[in-house]
Amino acid sequence: MDSMIVLMAQCMTVSAIAQMIDEHDTRIWRILQHYVEEARFNEDFSNTKSIGVDEKSRAKGHKYVSVFIDLDESRVIHVCEGKDASTIESFKDDLDQHNGSSGNIENFCCDMSPAFISGIENSFLNASITFDKFHVMKFMNEAVDKVRREEQSHNALLKRTRYIWLKNPENLTTNQNEMLKPLKRIRLKTMNAYNIKLALREFWRYEYRKSAEDYLKLVLLGYA
Image (cartoon, rainbow, N blue to C red; front, side):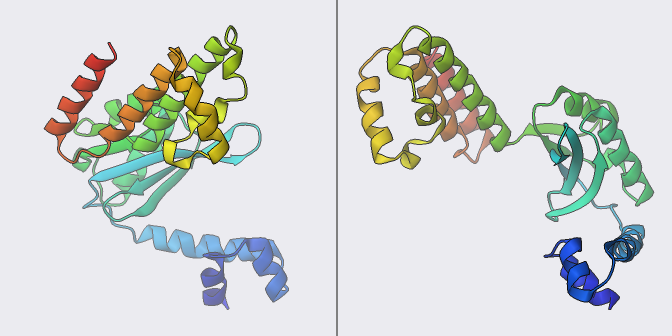
């Protein structure tokens, strides 16, 4: 029965399992906790070198958990409450308890959270920090939208165009493409910001650091 519960929990909610086997959900949680703790006890992080971390909302009211992933193994190895620098320290303690070492961590991939950055710099002295594509482009989209909102206050043509600038060209609908055509012929700060976003998107296609750096310098010079 325990094995079946553990297998079902990988693709079903606890409440659904409880209803299916006619058992109280608190017992299901106890069973899962037992086997998770047993599996965690046997974890070995001695070869862990590359980590990804991101926060996830777990409930309403700004309640978060931070999820740490071994990027080489593509698996979650630590989860803790919060999204501040203390979560980095929590991971470091857990790493030490499972034969790992902060000195072995060569790379951390995260968003641009100052809390994450300071925590990594203080606790993982040998690790370089990589900002992942998703969060960089999210930041860029927010910047484009900020330009649009400011320009829209004195240019009525930009009203109801928000999602045109947030989407990539290949994802625009026919109507959105038609709305964009006349806007391209006008000197708009929003269009300039949008073109910078599209140029930055191309940056991620470069596999080699030197090529990526050269491309980024050209983009910066072009929009300076």
